[in-house]
Amino acid sequence: MYSDSLFQQLKSQLRNRLPGNSSHIKMLPPGRLLQMPGLTDNYRESAVLILLFPSVDGIELCLIRRPSTMKNHAGQIAFPGGRRELFDADLIQTALREAREEIGIDPETVEVAGVLSTVYVQISSFLITPVVGWLSERPEIHTDPSEVAEVIFISLEDISSEVYRCNKEMETMTGILEVPGYEINKNFIWGATAMILAELVDICNRENQL
Image (tube, rainbow, N blue to C red; front, top):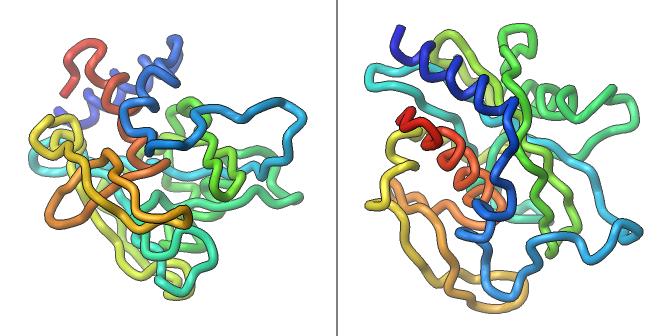
């Protein structure tokens, strides 16, 4: 399948040097740090799963909207994921475990392609490792309503298009900021999620895969 070929190309690209900060800065909210101030600073390890799967036109991915009642990042669009627990062998296991708990994805069905560059979230002191995974078909979703208010599917092709990039005023913990992001089907994706997507798109575009 065409989408399988695209994923294998992406998997190959993840073995090369990643663009990291040069991609992240495109979607960095104003006044926020791109990196942690120092290695000794306190931070919380976490991981998210970029769940890719084939669609009629190519590749889609799965995002979630956090409930408005959550302590951190309430109501925001994010990838399935969360904080690393002591029993997690590594951050890949963290991402797969969280995806199972939040949207019901069986880890055994996911082919892990690799990881993207870490993203530091200054406001909550999370250091996020994005894990790229592949499913052979569109997932059957079973959400945990305490963690997920809505599941959102978007195409990788749409994310790669300049048409959907824009700046928008958002209410944040530090006040109203005009932030960069992606607006697709009335969903505005910004912050760490947009920074992760920016790197994913840049990696895919290395050899015009999209």
